[in-house]
Image (tube, rainbow, N blue to C red; front, side, top):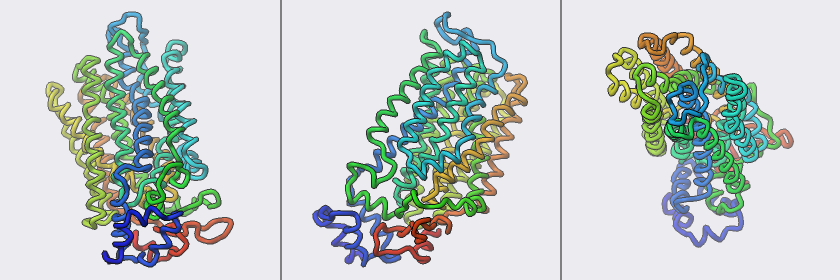
Amino acid sequence: MQNELQPLIQSNTRANNYNSTCDFENDISSFLTDDNKTVLHLALRDKLPWYGARHTQAVLLFVLLTIGYAMRVILSVGIVAMTDKTASSNPDIPTYDWDDKSVVLSSFYWGYVMLQVIAGYCATRYGAKLLLTCTMIINSAACIAIPFMADEFGSKGVMACRVAQGLSQGFFYPSTHTLLGQWAPTYERSQLGTFVYSGASFGTILGLIITGLISASSWGWPMSFYFFGATGLLWCIWWYLCGSSKPSEHPTISKEEQFYIESSLGHLNHENIPTPWKSILTSLPMWMIVVASFGQNWGYTTLLTEIPNYLHAVMGFDMKSNSLLSAAPYLANWIVMLSVGPISDFVINRRMVSRGTGRKIFNSIGVCVPALGLAILSYLPSEQKLLSVALLVMIVGINGAVASGYQVNHIDISPNFSGILMGITNGSSNIFSIIAPLAVQVIVTDEADKSLWRIVFLTASILFIISAVFFNMFASGEIQKWNYIQSQDSKKPTEKFAYFGGSNVPTNNQQVNDEKV
């Protein structure tokens, strides 16, 4: 088999002489068997330059989520400064006496859950480039407007801006998943996916640290909103110039890289296809992703929005220390996310475990270890400051393993409709992101009372475990049959080639079964 592939995988001159992707594919079609498919794709990948167009798209999406999450979390620290007269060294910085801080923190998610499914559908049907440009502009404008709205309309004005930010950021994850479904080859899925989604942790780090430092300075908390809003507008220019919805629309991608990506994933023309809504909504693996998202969103949102309050009220840290310590867990989370992607791809591509088993293993690590940590944290006395912070770092850090668990499972079961799946799962599960901060406000009537925080932490721990049990029992790593649909125009399979984009290799049951793991 390797001898048969030598003319293709070792000849740079020959590969560079093809006039089109189809010419290249037609030449190798005689070699495309079930046994050498993986070897061929890995060999093609090794012949490509170390950095390609797909990596540029991944960097752009990483920065998108970095900025998006920075804007999402700055209020977690900012609201402490907005309600504390001693936070800034400048006495002229406005502060407010608000008793609805948890409601303000949850308001982002009111808008966030509303348009997720529509976002996934629009990104799949019309492409994500223009969609992300417009929504980031709205998101950035709302961020810049927060200081003015707070001064003019109080907490209600801030809520209005946060709802607008939630509505616009509701398009980020479905669009990102759609783009990964178009750009991330099967054999690099975990690596590129975890890198992109690690932007959420990196943005959290930057958002918490920069907001804390700016809020404690003479510039005060308003400058943090101006800074990140302006950064978002700059990203829009970069994305508009360098981003692309799919490889075939990219102006500078090489023919070899385009073939490598498209042959790994399969071509699909989304303009003339029906969305298999019934099959999607009755899919058990899809609903297991929803269940996993429920547990993750409750626990992660609780930590994301309430760690600064916990460190300030229970541990007694000042503003600057609070922001740095609040960011430390997300630095660990970012490192874990960057690490698990290559590890996951390695063990799955070497067939040490099946794709489905690999997702379950990493997902279990990402939620069960933090669940244990939260249970321990809930019983630690508040005097154990160092140990408590260390546990928080471990809890949030290890949670990053879910990036190679349920978070990329949408693309496993349906690369063609992964954006729509992300819209459904992320939209429905983020209802818990609304409820979690409100539940904290109801439960924690005295922020300095550690026993009340124990209820919060144990609740998150239990939901982590429940979600892991269901995901391990019923999730799948197999491409679902409804991923391969028919064009409304031709009634022929639009997903003509499950793995190879040309006209000589029609999809058949054997090829579909090859992806079942």
